[in-house]
Length: 219
Image (spheres, rainbow, N blue to C red):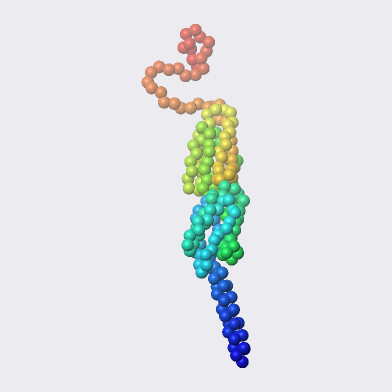
């Protein structure tokens, strides 16, 4: 009978020891998954464990700041259109106890009106730009005034006083994603090619000069 009692005590001690070991190796995290926008940023995960723990990761675009009871996960901006993912492993004494999945969406950029045909008299257009991140534009067209207006591209096309068609390109960029808006403006009719200008008082000539030594014979 005494042997049975000793055996039971031994079993209980072993069970308590194993339970204590398993409890020490437990780890609790506030989030098992994190999602970042293309802009990146930092998010905090709370960590709870009775043992000393470490984190491991090999994702280049992630930076993890480990503190006593939390980790700060920092994601760099994603300039590409493809989404990407990474894993942070929480370890105790070299054993992986928990994993945190990190995903970051890619850049989305959409412009419906990429080909614009404008009459010679000019126009003012507001082009919607749909994107999940910040975007910029680049324009070298001297006959267009271009501005960013919230989620729209405001384009003011000046009147074309020449009789030839003219073309220009405005580039819209978000990260490494880019789209071109091509503007084609028709030339004016010959009778529309005159531009009104301000002049000071005095004598001046207008029209086509005929062959004249005095250079004063104008139509």
